[in-house]
Length: 291
Image 1: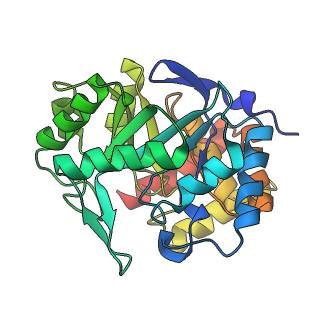
Image 2 (image 1 turned 45 degrees about the horizontal axis):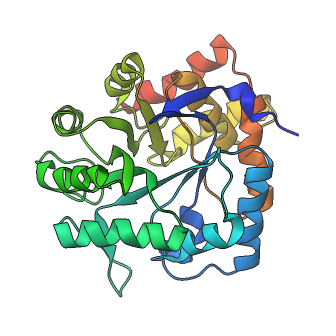
């Protein structure tokens, strides 16, 4: 069995978690909306992840909506003391599956309470504010009002720690003036390297960085380069892309998601992949082509 401890640990809030976690987004239906095709398999995936040593799950009550959290509760509640569940707020799903901003005090308060109820928790370990100033990526603009609302809920004891998602470097700096920011969750991968400087700054400060879309934004040429490396390592392109992220910086926490146990095992096996300096240089060139 894969030893997830090989990938190391990093601090998330006041907890140390293994750097290879699990993202629950794919437990919902197509487009992260509605129920999964196979709920029993979704439950089995979660249970196997925990049995394999995963101690960090990323979710949100707007996945489904409500569905992924309900499945997590069905599969894992009562939770082990070492399990850290992280959620996101700031968005609301329309009946047409659209993603809509939900930054008002009423919406954010309801979102936190919905997460707590559906997960069966008294307090959330970490709540990430997901910026919806631009659905497709970070956009400058003030997050002071919604972040202040979350800080109030934190003082009430409903939230232990706060993070930010889909944000700019300035928004992280501004957010720290309101409350401690324990993690940043943005798109980042071999081809999408806008956050290089931010990752290094966060690492120096001991703050976790959680990348999503590990293969998002790749061109066919870049995918070919990645596939060639993967073939030599007897691994899949996704495994190599995840292994690169693990080696890129010690503060990176991975949350690859899947709705199948077979794919889960592939993802967790990344902890056993070792990349030489030559391979790292070859992979780094993918990002250089994107610049």
